[in-house]
Image (cartoon, rainbow, N blue to C red; front, side, top):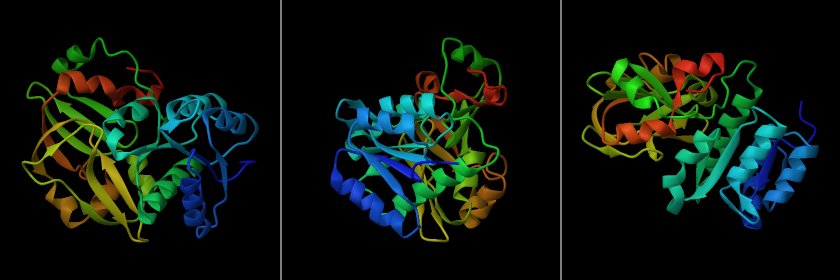
Length: 273
């Protein structure tokens, strides 16, 4: 139960707060706002929310500081980091630190509603995986060499690293697929296309007109796509971590990039990799 608004929007640009408020008003959602890190911290110490939208660059700190404060005061609350296109390469860091999703600026109504709907569904779910933070990475290389290992970019996507070939299968995490719920169209990368860790690699459109980005857990060249999900996006929704996989990848920077991911084999017991 929250004793604040549905959403806390943290941004030093009044036009952004006004845009969010206008968009979510049609969904009968209420917002509270803060213009800097200190104000956001004060709100989070006295009020609870269902989700937070927070700009990456803020007066007096950053969105990552707000993320840390939120985790201390309201563990499990989904935090969406809003960021300009020029800083998209930094999207991996918020996921690594426990952000629910990232929302590139400028965003349109469909993108905003998609992210908000997903965050609220996650927040309201009775059973949900933790927004895990990645631990030490010293033994990652030996893990990769010894067995097939499942890694996650937050709870957005997963990467199954196959030893000894090191080919990677990429898919959407159960929790994120569940939060989208109503799949309509799915745009996948083409075979031969290069994808980059922490940048969009696919896009889902929902039946109610919203859209959600899917973020690539690793960089590399796409070598195969799952034709089944291209023809029927609901296959992802039904079995996102099995038959609903998205594409296979020949990674270009596996050893260095895997350190930014959560070892999914350990999520269940709440331990870090």
